[in-house]
Amino acid sequence: MNHEQRYTIAQLHKQGSSLRSIARIIEVHVSTVSRELRR
Image (cartoon, rainbow, N blue to C red):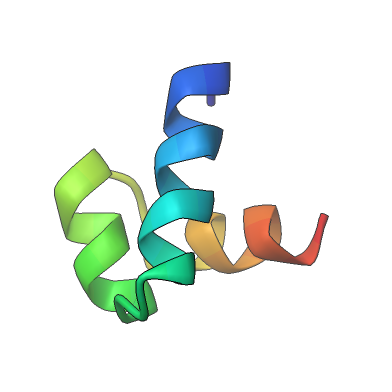
């Protein structure tokens, strides 16, 4: 996972996007998104 993907996750999460939709957008597994948000 690169810096740009982490930034995208953070921004989409702030906007209220669901974990599933974020995962679909950046093409990673939902658990990956969840793990990154816990960091």
